[in-house]
Amino acid sequence: MDLSKIKTLIDFVGRSNITELSVTEKDLTVRIFRAQPTVGGAVAGSGQERSAVAAVASAPDRLSVDRPSSFFSVKAPVFGVLHRSSAPGEPPFVKLGDQVEEGQTLFIIEAMKVFNKIAAPRSGRIASLTDVDGGEVETGDLLAEIA
Image (cartoon, rainbow, N blue to C red; front, side, top):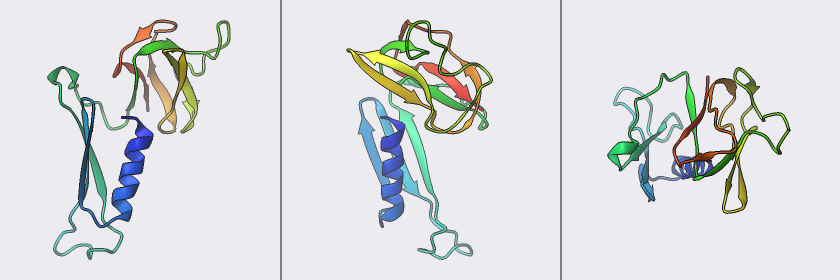
């Protein structure tokens, strides 16, 4: 499940009266819920409620150690050939230490002759970067971390 689908689901929960939504796609379950206001805290319906997301991999081998909250992992959404530049001989989209903006192209993954652009899910600095270029990546492989 890609990030844009998850954002759409979060927006849906935020606009509706439902308090919990669980969606499973392949081996990934996303659970979105609206936190209940405290008794002495926010008034229900005041817009101060928060939505939270928990993504759980059902396969035990997909579990990973949590990274510090200051890092955001960019993982391969599909299996395919990873390209770090738009064409052979061209400079890479990003280098280690580069500042990136949300939506900026980081990589391209070629899968079945379809070129999938992998965009930065948030702004920040590239803290780590895969050395794979022109090689295969599996779904869920760590491609980069944004600080």
